[in-house]
Image (cartoon, rainbow, N blue to C red):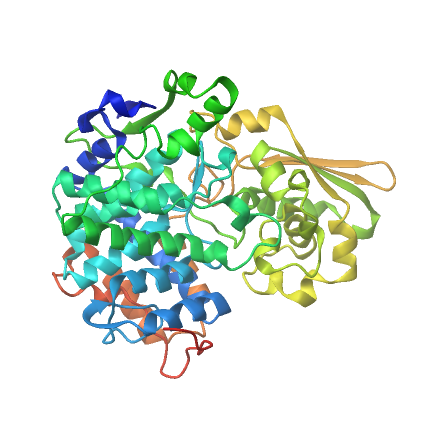
Length: 512
C-alpha cells in the first residue's frame, strides 16, 4: 500500500492531476490486477448477505416506495430489481436506487469502521446494476466490486467525515463510481472525472442519523449509488468535473472538512499549510484486498451494538430477576457513547414510540431487549408492542453509556488485534452487588468467537428469506451466486432474487 498525502492548494498553484487524490483513485480503478481467490470468495459472501437483508426487508414501506419509483423506469436489457421477476428490466440508476434501499433498510449487512464509518456492501447494487445493463460477466463484476470495496475502505481508513457532520455516503459515491469504471474497463481519465463528479454531488449531512431518524437512513446510500451511475454516464460522454475536488481552494476539504476547520481557527491562508489526510491505496499491480478488512452483522442493529448484544446474551444467564437491577452502565468508545448512547442527548433514543430507524441506533434500547430476551430478531425486537412493554421501558431507562479512553483508543487502533467495537458493562443490583463483563468484538467478527464463513452467510440467507421466497428460488440463487466467476457475459440476471407472483407490496402513487 502507498499513502497519499492530501492537503489544500490555492487555485494559482495549478495542482497537477497526477498529484490529485481523485486521479490516484482512478489509477487504482484502471489497474487490471487480478482478483485473488479469497477476495472473490468474500465478494460472493457479501452478494449473498445483501440478498438476505434485501429480501427480508422487501415489503417494508421505504423499500416498497423505492421499488415503486424504480418500476416507473423500465428499460429493455436493463437491470433487475429485488423481488421482481428477472425477465423484467429497468434503468440501472433506478435499479441501484431500489436495490440499495432494500439492502440498507434493516441495517444488517456488512460494515467497516476506522477514521469514519461505512457499509461497503452498498457498492454492490449500483455496480451490479450497471454490470447487468452493460451485459458484463461474473469475472467483470468481481473486478468492479473489488475496486468498490477497496476505494471506500481506503477512504474510510483516512478521512473522517462524521466530525464535520457529513454523512458517510461521501466516500461511497466515489467508490461506486470507481468500481463501475473498473467493471467497464474505462480509461483513467474517464474514471477520474466520474470520481470527482460523484464526490461533488454526494455531500449530505448527518442529520439523517440524528434525532428522529427517518427512512432517509436507507435512502441515503441508495441515492449515492444512483448518483454514481449517473456520474459515470456523464463522464463516458466526455463531461468533466469540478477539479481538484479534494484539494482545490473551494473544494470539499476546503469548505466542509478539515480545511474549513483550520480556516475558521487560523484564517484562510493557514488552511493551505497542513497535510490533512494520508490515504492508503494499492500500488500499481498490487491486488485489491480491502474487502477482507470488513465484517458483516449477525444482528439487525447499528454495528457498535453487535458485540454488546452478544454480551447481553452472556450476562443474562447470571440474572434471575430483571426488576432487581438498579442501573446499567456501559463503558465504551466515543462513537458508541455519542452516536448511539446517552451522549447523543437524543430524547428519541429513550422513547418507546420512536421509529425503528431510531431504536436500532439506541444502545440503551437494544441492550435492554437483548438482556431480557436472549435473542435478537430483525422484526420482533423492534415491534411497537415489544418496545412499549412496561418492564422493558423501566429497564431501558436505567441504562447509561460513558466514554472510556481505552475503548476509544482501541476503536481507532491501527493494530487489527486491538480493534474493538464493544465495551464493558456494569450491572448494579438493588442489593449492591455488581455484575461486570466485557466483550471487544462481536461473535461474528473475524476475531470473534464464531467468525462468519460461507455456511453462516448461507444460513443467514435461508433464515431471513424463509417464507418469503420459494425453496426452489432459494436453491437456484445460492447455486448461481457461488458459481459467480463462471457466469457468462449477459447473464448476471441470475443474481436477482424474485418473490412469488403477487407477493410484492404496492407503494403509494407519486410522480414516476
